[in-house]
Length: 237
Image (tube, rainbow, N blue to C red):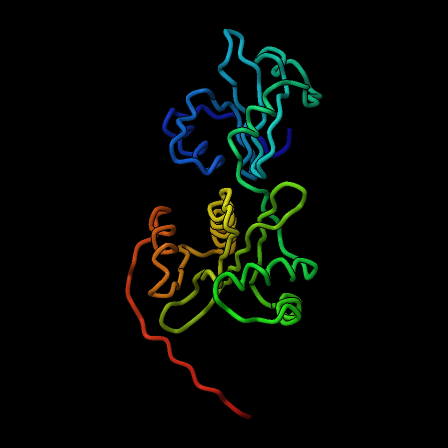
């Protein structure tokens, strides 16, 4: 199976991955033993609910399925279609993070609605035009929940300067009130994209009054390095 590699994760590794996958900091992941990992971050694990545990797929996009009734069946089967089971219902109860994909101009209206929740007055048409006009090493991700509903977006870009050199910056991130793990899923996607483009770290600028956003980033390993005064001035050609 292309992209898959066998692994033997420790309980700590499993716990940390499961917390990211569910966006639930209180879960332990003790009901799983991960046996394979995909390049995209998906995992195959034994679901420890029986003396002969079934094998389940935990997709990086939040999907979940039982794919074999036992490790023996998994090892001996080359074609592994998902099996009907109660695992999907179980996984659904854990509210896995929304799927993350690259934004298109058709997502402009939903992104616009989320931008307004940040307090910015940007016309929906401008959002569409800006999505189309982005050039260089940029990407906009959207988090998609059930029925295709967009519940968050994030913009990440690579910048170059004489002082800082090459680095990744988060150009913006917003999620709906329900959250559903969208913020974590988007930030993870942005960080992976940045790493693939040669960045050693992600840099975030956040308004001094956005204390909730500060806590969000700090809980995910970000540290405050300095405070700044932002200035602007209209210019004419």
